[in-house]
Amino acid sequence: MKILKDKTAIITGATRGIGRGIAETFAKQGANVLFTYSSSLDLAKEIEKDLSSEGVVVRGYKSDASSFEDCQKLVEEISQEFEVIDILINNAGITRDNLLMRMQEDDFDKVIEVNLKSVFNMTKAIQRTMLKQRFGSIINMSSVVGVKGNAGQSNYAASKAGIIGFSKSIALELGSRNIRCNVIAPGFIETEMTDVLDEKVVQEWRDSIPLKRGGTPFDIANTCVWLGSDMSSYITGQTIHVNGGLLT
Image (cartoon, rainbow, N blue to C red; front, top):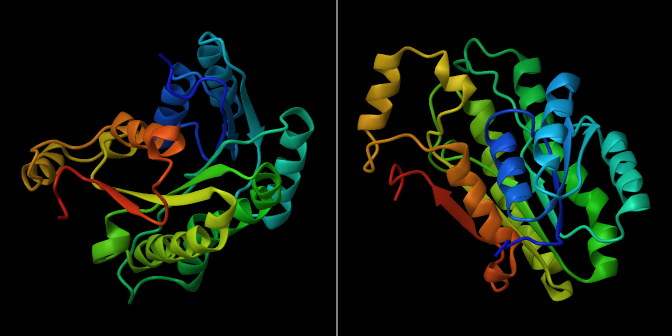
C-alpha cells in the first residue's frame, strides 16, 4: 500500500541531499512530486526521468525560495494544473559558517533569507490554496542546531530556531481550517556535503550519537511521509527530532 497515493507535494530544494531523499521516497509512496531547484537543471531533469518511473507526476521548477515574488509565481503556475496541494515541504537551505567575530553581515543576512524567509514566502504563497480546500500539511525543516545552538553557526542556528517559532504560530493560525504545520529537526545526516569531510571527523561524530551512526536522507524522508499522511492527522505545532539520540 502506498501511503501517499494520489497526494500532491511541493518540495523546495530537492536536487541533492535530504531534499532528493524526500522526493524519491514520496514518489515511491505514490505522491505527485513538484520540486524546486535553483540552478541544477541537469539534476532536475535526471530526477524527473528517474522518479517518473514510479507512475506519478514529477516536475521540477526553477524557483528561488528566498524570493517572495518567485514563490507567488510558483504556486500560481502549479495551481493552474493541480487543483489540490496536499503537502508543502520547506527544505531549501544554505550554510555560511563562521565565528561571529569573522562573520560578515551578508553571511548572516543571506542565511536568514534562504533558510527562514523562504519558509514565510512559501507558506504565504500556499496559504490561500490550503484555506480554500480546507486541509493541508506544511512540514518545515529545522535542525538540531536550531534547538541547542552551535559555535560558528550563529546565523544558521538563528534561522533554524526561527523556523520553529514560525511553525508553532502557523499551527495556531491555521488549525481551525484543518491545516497542520510541523517541524522536523534533523541531527547529523550523511549526504554529499559530509562525504568531503575527513573520515576521522565523521567517525567522531558518529561515536557521539547514541545510535552510533549518522542519519540518512531517508530517515528524514520517512518522517516527512508520516507527517504528510493521514496517519498524523492529529499532530500539529510539533518539532520532531530525528537525530539518533544526539539531543534528548
